[in-house]
Length: 75
Image (cartoon, rainbow, N blue to C red):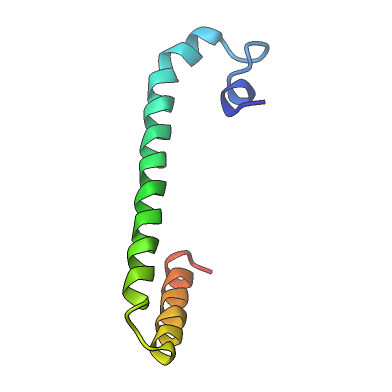
């Protein structure tokens, strides 16, 4: 069952309401997909940069990036 069917099941929600917000849902989804693509490109760029380091500095970069990720995600 898709998100839309779960959240806007006509048995429980007025289908007309769904149609009024459908474009907004689609737009939000498209924006999120673009952000995923941006994140993947950023990881690719990071990997390209790390490949230029020797193995000791690659490990340092990995741990520093992991720590930054944990900080940003409040882990």
